[in-house]
Picture 1 (cartoon, rainbow, N blue to C red):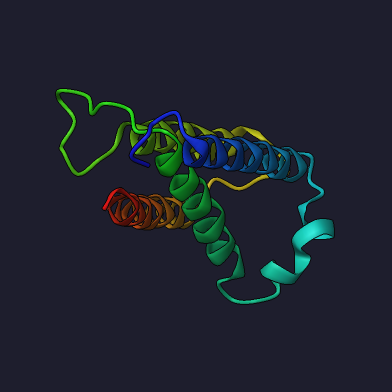
Picture 2: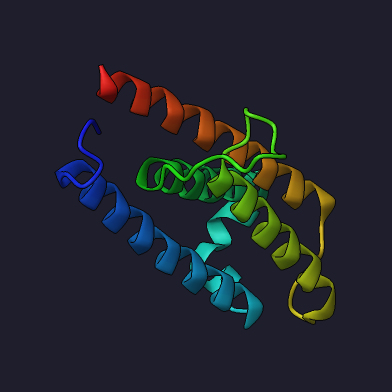
Length: 134
């Protein structure tokens, strides 16, 4: 990570973009009402849906924060990265939009699982980035 244009940055950028596409496909499948066909095994467990949110968003946050080291916004607390803020806004809009999609449910606990994933992904990415920079 010392060389911002090096192979690590290309690798993390490619992984982040690929996972973002995968994430968008999952949202589209869920919006169409076909989710149980693909990940019905998750909803059979008590907190499977929340765990799915945590893992998906955590992975997206982790890869996004590794791929992009954007300068912090001046009014943003130092402990929130710009990527995490962008993902927070997009995920909040996506969760609220579910109230208007018949096959979806707007659920505050899904949103809280998303926020937990955002935080864990950011912490893990920043920790790994610090180790790679040594």
